[in-house]
Length: 419
Image 1 (cartoon, rainbow, N blue to C red):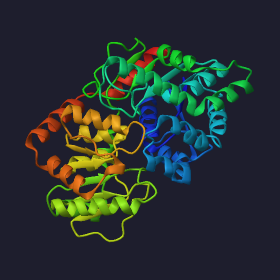
Image 2: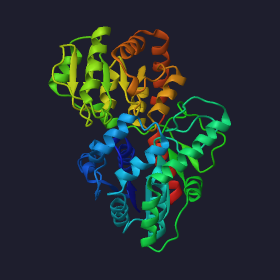
Image 3: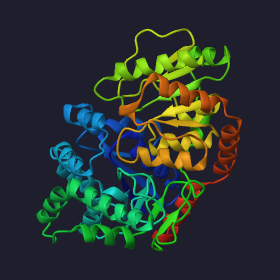
Image 4: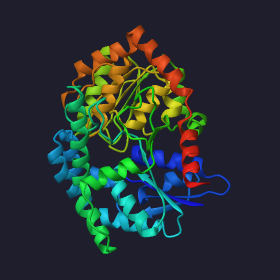
């Protein structure tokens, strides 16, 4: 059987696709990853056959519109529609056409749930089954507010569920003109937001997150299965550069600070806040610049500047983690059993920050636009010095490490596709 996995977005979006593809590659199953060209190196490193898609999302997010979107926090869902359409306009149809080509010989397609309408269209054209995956929940529920919804406190089940339908409409509006133009070219009928919901509730959908963090809502349909997080144990065998290892060996476990691609239009601003907060707390720090380019030139001896390192290797060597609240980074922090300080910028990051707070393994998230050295210092102080929080984090990590979400996902997919 030949399976194509279609993924796009940041590395946090594509990484689950890569991990699933690696695990699916077993006798009788060939996997092809269709993702933007800038992920070719990642696929090659992981030994995953690769089909490039036109359009570099990282480059787009680094542009003026992307930087404005990150700086505003994407807090206004209506404005986000205009921003996303402007960013996706030049590449959406190209990506869809390239993904369709990647499925020329495919027997099945797997794609991220947010791209379900594109996936459904490709599956219709090729006459193949579709499976959806999600690192963050997309379906409405009364249990919690929808990821991306500005109000991330529960105002009751009706509010929570309505926020879910509202965010589905927002996501649909991001790219519906491109979906329907793509379908028109193949003489398929246009889709509506109702069709988007119907696809999500009728197609096998795997939630790549832990039931410890998100217990399965009773009002979700039967097609959804929460598998547990999808981790890559190869990361734990990574060999660090000598200077990083020397820094870790030369003192107490440091605090990790990294905002991934979210540094915004003024990365030096965030770097300054971080360095001042570490100075105030007296903590050693590992500062990850990320491809967002958090600008750092001179740092004190108790801070190590890191371009990148696998979180699965790095986090168990930290005392706490400070990050933007991306789904993947949040998962790795939980697996390591560490208290977290979440500084959300856009979309689902505030949602993950509130989940961390609800679990008692972190305090209330600090919105990026409200981040100050004083607030960050206070949060770091508590994350490193609150014994009860540290114990809760350690206990959660123990439970999450015992889950094998990736194996559950693979077995579910194989069973569904009859492999």
